[in-house]
Image 1 (cartoon, rainbow, N blue to C red):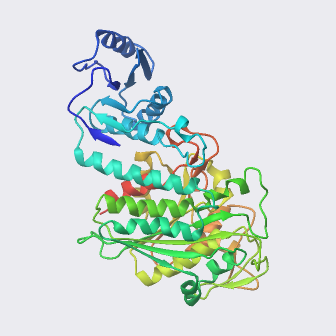
Image 2: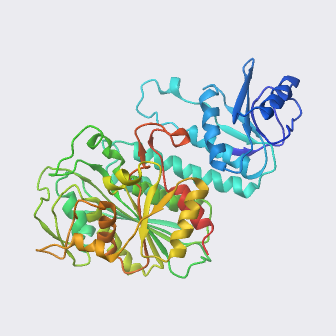
Amino acid sequence: MIKQSKSYSADGHIAFIVGEKFNSIEGVSKIVSEQAEKFIASEDETDYLKIGNQFVFFVKENENLEKIRVAAHDIRTKLSKTAEEIFISGDGAAALALAEGLELSNYQFLKYFKEADKKRYLLKEISLLGKVDSKEVATLNNVLKSVYWARDMVNEPVSFLTATQLSKEIEKFASIANLEVTVFEKSKIEALKMGGLLAVNKGSVEAPTFTVMEYKPKNPKNKKPIVLVGKGVVYDTGGLSLKPTASSMDLMKSDMAGAACMAGTIYAAALNELDVHLIGLIPATDNRPGGNAYTPGDVITMYDGTTVEVLNTDAEGRMILADALAYSNRLNPELVIDAATLTGAAVVAIGTKASCLMGNASQEILDALTKSGNEVHERLVQLPFWDEYLEDMKSSVADLKNIGGRYAGMITAGKFLEHFVKNPYVHLDIAGPAFLEVAQNYKGKGGTGVGIRMLSNYLQNYK
């Protein structure tokens, strides 16, 4: 947890954000000041001292806050596991960025380790000594709490996190003021005729769920809600179009990262009492090849009556999202945003360093999302969204088919989804950065919780 502190323990671990001059604090030894002067004269971005059991870190002041977040990860790798508190000497955005990077680097998913206690970081408090706005500290803590929750969800295996369990985890948020959670069970989903979600679920012994979250503050800025839709495929074998195992199916517990992103974003908004009316829609199921699994060649009637020819059962995310997006029309939203680990094409195109952004919402909205992504370093790459791309999704036996041609798969998938939305729409394909096989600084290894910090920034500045 990040907190503000008025005093420093003389033997406490501390990180100094250093500008052109070193501003020491009471209780710090002369050797620290001497090392700081050498650090200022050097070209190093970070440095540290170990005095007995005490760690003293130095980080160069930088307008690029991402460099400070990454420096915080370096601090976490050097700081002992047993350290329970670290102080930060610095002001404003730089201090918050260092604290943010430290808190994110401190995340661990140890639930299934027999000897978890031996691996666990004991760091509980990151104490800010400088001038920092207390409201910004509280806001940051709530966003990071939501990122932790999302990372936990993405890292959980389907042996625990079934669609039903995911809905139960989201239901726990209902204790927060102005936030309501309603879960549609299979019978309700059948009554609504959500054909896409039901089709993907046919091969599973686990029931699907459709979770509706609504955060409505007393005086929201927006007269009509913003709807956030997240893909909740809790495990994806590919169905009858079975995936290969290595670096594919073995990672597919993460295929609900879009659901974690959107549920986590609403969780953060409620904790921070943002004055924005939000509704979250989370369709959830696993995708298995068992039982009466849906097959290539099937024609599915979706929630809005659109018929879809299934050519690949591994293109299942768009099937369940389409029903949720069509359901959003009844809510009369001013904006619909979805997030999904939707296509391998997105990863091939831009890798793990950014998410794909596309949609028919105004360029002002797309630019604002891009700006928020740049500010928190959850970057977005805007792709073209021309109507011609939908031609690849036209079927000879139904209204649409669920896969397109060889090229631009992330865009044709987005155009497929756009068909079901009647309001301004943004699609985020987060397949690259949502789950990392190799650790990337403070983003870690495994589930990253990507999208929550970006969307939280966007909603905090929403007009």
